[in-house]
Length: 583
Image 1: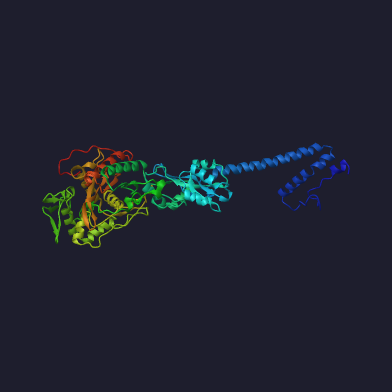
Image 2 (image 1 turned 120 degrees about the horizontal axis):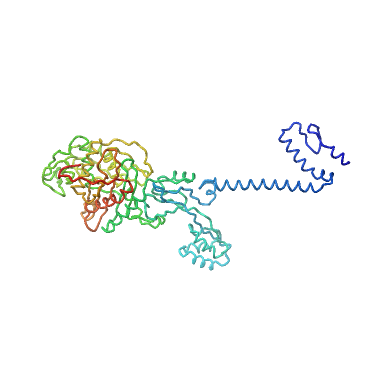
C-alpha cells in the first residue's frame, strides 16, 4: 500500500467494520471516544512508519505511560492522605491491633486526664526456633528481672509458641529485642493505664486486659466509654481533680495521724447531684489493682455500712418540722432520762432541762429526738426515711452502691434509736444523698458521676420552708454548737456532728467507733443559691478524740476552705449575732 493509500484509509465512524475497530454506531459517545483513543495509540507506530517518522511513536508511547503512572501515583497519594487524616482514632486502624481496647480517655469535668490507653507488648516465644534455651533464659531474665522464672522455663521447654508475659513497655520490649534471639516475637496490645496512680482510684475503677470495665466508673459507663472511643471522643466524669486532690489530702492526713482503720469523704453539688470528689482511705494504685489488699480495694463510700450516730438527728428534726409536729420554738422535756418500757435513754451532753427544738439540735439531745420519733409514729418516720433514700441503695451509676441494713420492726424503742442514728446501717453515699435533698430546697435526686448530672427533676421530700429551717439550724450548730471546728472564714458552713460506737459481738464497744460530720456551704441565701455538701467520716480512730466535732468537723472546714475558690464560692464576713439567734 502506498503512502497516499495509507493516509486515505481512515474508517468513518458510521462505516461498519468486521475487524480492527469495533462497531461504534450503537454505543455511547464516551465509549466511542475511548475506543478511538485506544485505536489511535495502538496504530501510532504504523502511521509514524508510513510517514517515515518512527520517533513519533516512541514519544507517544512514553507520554501515555507517564500519564498512566502519574494517575496511579496520584490516586495512591490521595488514598494515603485520606487514611492518615480521616480515619477515626480507635476505628479501623486500631481494630487491626491485636488486643486493642478501643476505650475512650476518661477525664475529669475540666478535661484533666484520669485514664488512657498506651501500647504495650506481649512477649511470645516459639521454643522450636530457640538454639540455646539456657542462654535464652539467662538473657531474658537479665532484660526482665520480674518475669516469673517458672513460666519462662515452662515455655522454653515446651513445643509450641506461647505468651510468656503481657504488658511489656516499649523500653522492656527493646531490651529483649536487643538480645537478638530467634523464636522471640512481640504482639502489640492496648493497655489501660491510670496516670494518677492512687488518686481517684476507687471512683475511676479499672478495666481488664480484655477492654472491659470491672469496677468504678470504668464498669458503670463501660458501653458509653467504648462508644466514645470508637468516635475518637473523651468521656468526662463529674469529678473535679482539684476537689478530689484536696479531699484525699486532708482525709489521708487526718486518718494517718489518728491511726484510723479507714476514712471516707464526699463532695457533691447540691443542685445537680454531681459528685465532685469521692475518696476512700486507704487507697490503692489503680495500675496495680491485683496487688491491692481487700481493705484497700474496698470503696467505703459506696459499700461500707455504718450506724451514723447523731447526724441522723437532722432527718428526725426535719420530719418533725415538715409534718407540723413541732417548730423551732416547741419545748421538749429533756430534764431526765426518757424511759421506753425498761429501756433508759439519756443524753451524752446532758442539760437536765426542758429544751426548745433548736436547743435539742444544738445540744444533740437523744432524749429530745427520741420523744419526737415516738410521737411521730412508725408510718410517718418510715415515710421520711424512705423518701430521703435511707432505706434503699443510693441510686448512682456505680454498681458497688450497697443496700442499707434496715430495721425489721418500727417499734417505739426502734424509732427512738433510729432518731439518733442507731438501729440502721447505711453507706456514706446514702448519707450524702439525703443531706443534699434537705439543703437544696427539699428535692431528692440521684447522685451522679456523669458530668452535668442525670438531668432528672427529682421528687419533693420536704418543703422549701423546712429546707431553709434546716440550713439555719445547721449553720447555728457550727456557730454555737458541736460543729464549731468546721467553720471556714466567710463560707457560712453549716452541719451536724455524729459519733457512734460499733456493735462488736452483740455489744457496743466504746473503744471502737466512728466520728462524722455532714455539712453544707454556704448555708445561707435563697433556695437558688449554689451549694455544696461535704460529708466526712473517720472510721475507728485510735489516737485522740473520736467525736465527730473533734475529728471530722475540722477536716470539713479545711476542705471547704481550700476548694471554695475552685467552685467560685464568694466569701462573706458573718455578722456577730447574740446568743439564741439563728440566721
